[in-house]
Length: 334
Image 1 (tube, one colour):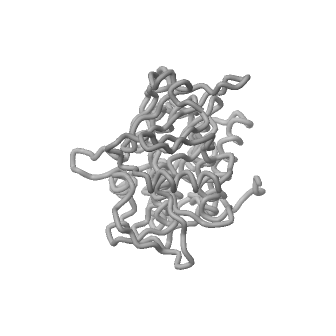
Image 2 (tube, helix red, strand yellow):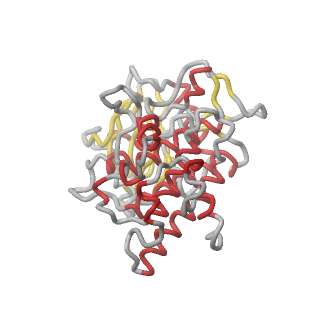
Image 3 (tube, one colour):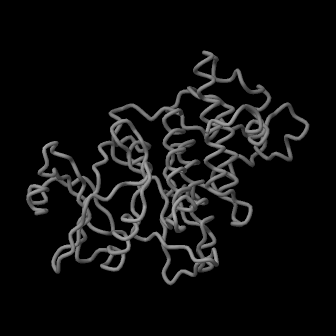
């Protein structure tokens, strides 16, 4: 398979990162299948070792919410991976307004993408014959198909998890804004992926970029925590204004509470990805129920909660249902 021919001599660039450049290509089959060719640059952050790791990982891992490997090239002057083509780019692109032509993702779409991403990560953690840690979960590593089906990408630094459940890091990995504070101690666990995924949940709620610090130098997770801790601060203060109120507040509260649990500084209290999948199913159910019943956005939640502090301890005697209360009702969607 000649990569030069597939990519028209590497002329159509569709992405770029520390590893090198991604080019669009077309396979010489009867369907003219579109592919994405990830070509390693000479100064790539991802060297031959990481390249082979990604090939080995992708050869073993098969899930509807993981990007599929079509083939690869390993030559002395060229290292390249050939993936299925994801026509709608990344979740990050959509949240930044780079792909939507003026339209933002709806709350329902954001929920569905998050749920599918969680399913892919849960498969990595416990659904396959061996367990992995992704180590670089972020919205730019969530790719989208024509119908906005989400698939997790960039498994080059994924690590096979030993029976110890905690791995020691020789080098720091992850991306600013998404990185587990536990990394600073030189350790990584599956709960590190959970932390990063929690940041993605905050990202879909706020529409803000986790890697961009505010004027005070604070990252998104801490900025949201500070805002929600303010007196009489309701969740509407942090919700992406582009959603224009088109959401179930129950659903948003559910996702916020889940994000708060995922981004706990201590890894121990964080939920598993399996638990995350279950809660996101319920968040989707809440949003779908709103659409089915034709209810207005606030009809499923006490008006008191809108201006209420998010701290559960401060809501104890209020007429407010926490995420756990909400999750406890209704049948499982599995």
